[in-house]
Length: 349
Image (cartoon, rainbow, N blue to C red; front, side, top):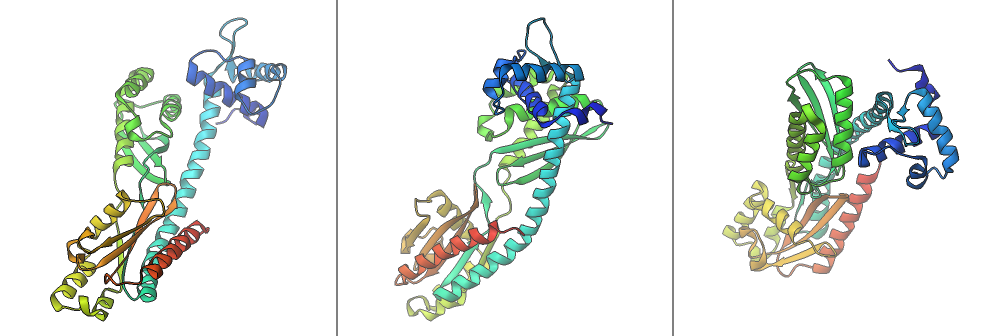
């Protein structure tokens, strides 16, 4: 149950409390009014900040460990800070889940339709891959108690992809312990890629976690799995039979192999990976004949483009046709579809 004094914490006091906690977490040293006036966006004088800090101390949110020293957060201050953070994060997680579920359904239909449009407008074969996350950084972590023996670890990474993991704990954690672990992990890990979370950092986190160091190890494992696990790659194709329109590709054996490659999607993963790995400035790549990364396309030209729906979420669009294809038209069509995918995806569902 929340303390009645929580209602007395106006926005200015809350921002000062946030600044005190952030500075204390970073330095481990009591925080003074001059530090707050420099580091926060409040644009308040040191005198005003001192008055607000005095009120926060009277309300029990901060403590003054020594005379004439700065302040440190009290347990009550930590509690308010983390409760507010978790409320915001829980709301964000729910909003993300709802948005992603709606967009996932829309995305399947959108990509299949886009493949058909590409095939019809170019009269070649077309393929589109689902967007994959290619910038795996941690956005935030949320720990919550499930029961006496389990914690729920919610990991959100860039691209707003969410991974939930249940971990066992040796003994029941108090709310205060969960709260402090949330602060510790988010303060040090948010915004990092997995390769940036090194052994020295993990050792320091475990030391700060004290008797809960094993939980830090489990959470790091959950973060690694969430960041490194690739989502299922889906590939949508259309227009394979357009190949029969071109005499140089209409040879029964060649055409059958190409159509089979498309319908069974054999080797198309390699085409996607090759495109993303070799992405250039304008996002367009052209493979002619033997340059094609897929064996069944060695008699064709393949033009691919990388589309990006939001930071790090990338996919591949490809057009496959004869070497004498209309390259200007194909490149123009690809660029148009890239732009349209971006615009449609950004629309609110």
